[in-house]
Structures are given as structure tokens and as C-alpha cells.
Length: 117
Image (tube, rainbow, N blue to C red):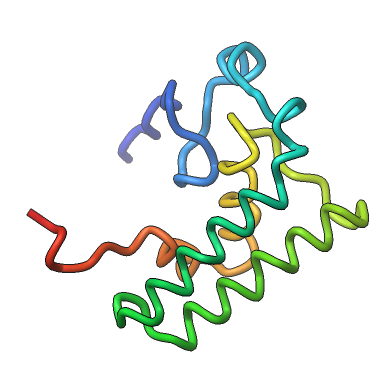
């Protein structure tokens, strides 16, 4: 049976891996930048809308991601959900989005075929 890979020093649950707890406690900015939640959600929502409009992500998937991003903002703001311990607010939002949407959350990082090398 293959051995589980060692935790990455640079990745977190948002990327499907774990961060070593001692590094997370040293490097996290989440307690400070949590106040940037609304801006992070707005930026990610604008990005996914663009992906949908350009046909890089199917429009229904883009709309579902956009809707869920604002639901995360609402839930965290109302203290219904606590963001997971991550490196920063962006990674914490992505981890929550992945928890809610599964693989579809990864579409937020889709790139145009024209940009791929």
C-alpha cells in the first residue's frame, strides 16, 4: 500500500493537501486578514463571472460558484460558519468553497486554453 505523502509546507486544505500545524501557526495571517473577507469574496466572484462570460467555465457552474461565495460571506459574517485554519482568508474561503461544492470549486482556477503553454 502506498504511503501517504508528507504534508506540504506550502499547501492547505484549499489545495487538497494539509499544512504542517507548526508552520500554519507560524505563517497564518487569517486572524488579521479575516476582515478582508468581503473583498476576497467580491474579487473571486468577479473572476468567476468573467470565466463564465468568456466560456472558460460553463455559465451554470460559474453562477453556482458565485452564489456559494456570497453564501460563505453571509454565513461567516453571521457566525453560522467558522473558516478553517488556513494560511490566509483567501485560502480559507477556497477550502470552504471546496467543502460545499466539491470538485466544482476548482473551476474558480480555470484558465483559458489560449493561456496554457
